[in-house]
Length: 78
Image (cartoon, rainbow, N blue to C red; front, side):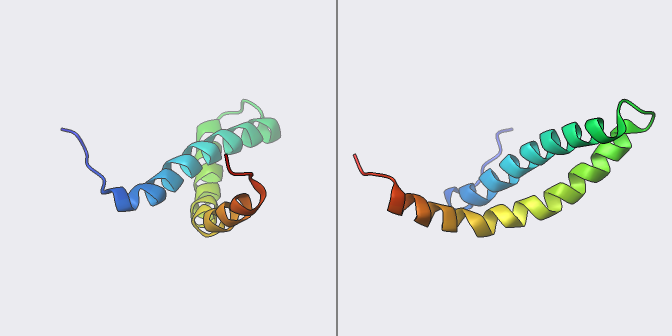
């Protein structure tokens, strides 16, 4: 079955997926550098990832329009 997301929700879903993936990568690396390959690493990583994602997702929703406005002012049109 193919999932369907309305076009109007695309920016939100984009932010959800982007922040989920980025926070997983960054928290995984940070956790590994801080703790190493220890027993229970997956649980440490999951806790770090979830807390990172909780902050990252709403931040992207708020910051994205601001960044777009800045880019429209500094990027030369074709």
